[in-house]
Image 1 (cartoon, protein in one colour):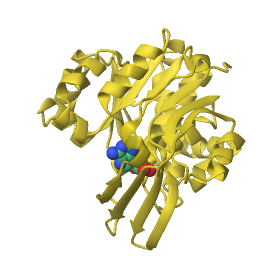
Image 2 (cartoon, helix red, strand yellow):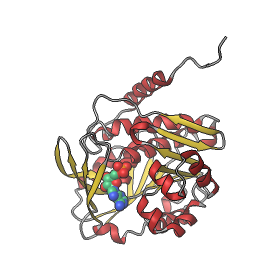
Image 3 (cartoon, helix red, strand yellow):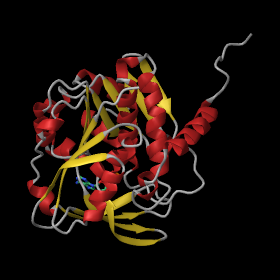
Length: 311
Ligand code: AMP
């Protein structure tokens, strides 16, 4: 198995979470945090992000304790990015109540020289011009994956279009796929997006699973059915982290015809662990053995015996 690294670039945050079961203030969050913690269960991880001088050293130590290289986390004077969200009773929708960019407003990702040869790159949801800038700082990556959001799709369509040309794998949700293309039918929207650059496209559908569109066709992974769902924050980022962690471990999407499809299960398993606890608590203590148990349950969930032919 390979020991190739995943480079994660994105937000590191304090989250204030208004959940049906109560409010949780100043929870460690941010897309890069969730993705890095998830990927670190499977592969060596490097993070590039920014925090303020209010960010506790123990959070950095937590990342390091998971083997994550934090040399790319810049600490600058000011406050750390802060996001406040309120979830609906069924946890299926959320409203952003407040976004304080703070030190994140001037974030210009600087990729340390030792990170520039990273073969797997995960560009978290930041300004597409910054995502493009990161891609240009990396030497011949094997796979560049990116996330984005409605805000950039409507606000920065041109630069997002430039970015898409340099992205191998785009990971977005169904609403974003529709907004990006103006096409309601997801299969048609996916074909349109794949013509713009990314040869692999994943469309996440929350508790309804995720679809992969690539050169081999369309593939679906369900969301793992859980009895206890506490906090969906970061599930998408954990999904992406699990996906890239697996691909780095096995040698990339081209390692076998089924590598991307298997990666979808690692991704969905990681998303399922994420939602079990408030903040990243569950994925920050997750072991390989626990992951393996869930993957086996996942396999059983979709196992129909291998053939649908009547005989
Ligand atoms: P997700 O639930 O996967 O959408 O990710 C939630 C994480 O994204 C939270 O921990 C937030 O701190 C972070 N976040 C929220 N808004 C933004 C934003 N505008 N830019 C970057 N990260 C954000």
